[in-house]
Image (cartoon, rainbow over all chains, first blue to last red; front, side, top):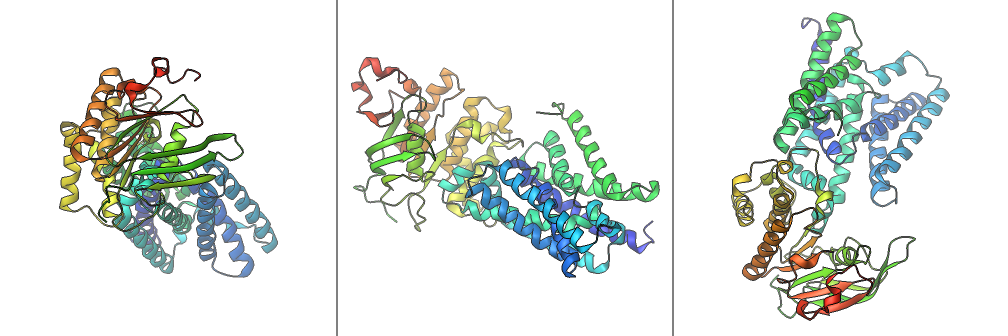
Amino acid sequence: MLELEFMRLALAVGVVVGILAPAVGFFLVERRQALVGDGLGHVAFAGVAAGYLIGVEPVLTALVFAVVGGLAIEWLRTRGGAAGDQALALVFYTGIALGVVLVSSAGRLDVNLFQFLFGSILTVTWSDFWLVLALGLGSLAAIAALYRGLVGAVLDEEGSRVAGVRVGLLNTTVAVLAALTIGISMRVVGILLIAALMALPVLAAQRVAWSLRSTLGLAMAIGVVSVVAGLVLSYYGDLAPGGTIVLIAAGAFVVAALVGARPLLR
Amino acid sequence: MPLEPSVPALELDGVSFAYRGGPPALEDVSLRVEQGAFLGIAGPNGGGKTTLLRLALGLERPVRGTVRVFGLAPGARARGAPRIAYVAQRAQLASGTPVTVRETVETGRLAVRGPFGPLRADDRRAVEQAIDRVGLADRAGAPLRTLSGGMQQRAFIARALAAEPALLALDEPTTGVDATAQESLAQLLSGLQNELGVTILYVSHEFGAVEHVVSRLVLVRGRIVFDGDPAALPAIWHDPSHAH
């Protein structure tokens, strides 16, 4: 398997995404915004469609759309008078509707679009790899540098605000990181499944971890294992890689829930 | 910035407030709290006591009137300004992740160190001291959700103390906590006020546990209906929910 360049590239990109998606998802789950990734995925879909329409690389337009969507959700949540789920619904449905309109205008309701919806990690190129690596490492560096601030803001937003912490800036950082993660993860599991890779490893880790740091570490480990195992399994079983990766992450949650001896749903 | 003793810790002048589209929650409230005071803020549910605290902390903005904390507008980020710590109601602080006591308290250092980079040795010392002060040194590595309600509340107070605040605000800290833990909490806060000179704002609808340690009690029911020594409180008002 490793003698094939496309598999080596797929695994390399998968490892970066497997670490990054749960690392960012950790802060979304902790803020009870696990579905934000889903909403941003739908905005990214509109970005892909816009890329087709104007003849620009769809990954780049998807990145831009996702970042704008992330900022819009944060603005609506904090200043627009919309509760978190309302802000998400507004952006979610606007994104998918805009995507449908744009993609039909571009006349690209075809198999290429499906690559973005469900992932196409086996078609990753070297230029994709370098983009994922650069944005992935940059995002992880930002999380490491701001870890204490991000944790404080998600554990006690108002307490941090009173303490003089610029919570709005930290929340915006999380929104942008989530959008970047969506943008660079599209090729791995697809727009429709990326939110799962952000949330499921974190939910699994919460069941067996003993601290905040161990939750984050375990989530990233589960993310990487899910991606690598999913790719290997899909290679030998001729399965869809994106779906296989997410199913393994879901399996990890079930195992962790049993090991942690806590109820599946709380 | 050294604190002028004459500057009040908190000053509200003619403050009125209403939540968007709602009736007035507070009307024409004026209040001056000296530095080092232990102020109990009590009243019935919906009476406006939490709103008063949120106005003081800058979490809400008054419709009319002015709020000053140590002479500054709440939320003003003046370099060296006295630090403020807030312990919200415990239900708001629940986490799905097994956060340990130490990890919780470490976030208190954000007020001192800011959000960038790792904690330094003096931050870690301050964290351990705060944990020790609230009596949780032997549980520092335990996840919060494995502790009793009273112990969790102590951990949140330790987080506030790690910020080395000049003003500590607590909102309903005894909710869901048994009587023994309530009494213990009152003694802890009293000790903080006496030893560290921290100004304490303590909001509760059940102020019996702190009645004997607060230096001043304010009853809020849309406006201030009592302000003075708790000992001077008419007996009938010891039940804050009754219709004054």
